[in-house]
Image (tube, rainbow, N blue to C red; front, side):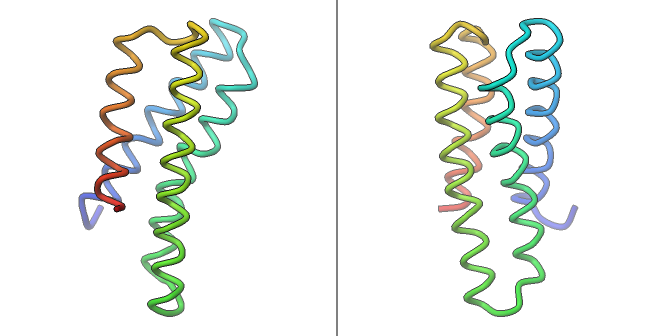
Length: 106
């Protein structure tokens, strides 16, 4: 990985994938976890796409969409916590990571 934002988003995506697998197999929760999987993995994909943007405007657009996906991921994580699918400790750890990504993207 060439730079911290890309590396952090990739590691976060791996955490989200593990969370999804756990939710589906252990909690039989499919709806919220699928949403967090989609938005949480999209962040890194958009950052990777931005690297080869066709123009500065394309780069900025992709990074802005990554920010929106990060914000959406934070929402789904809150729902998972408030509906008792993840505990406070899991939430705080994931929330810290997503807030760092949001800060880096802003």
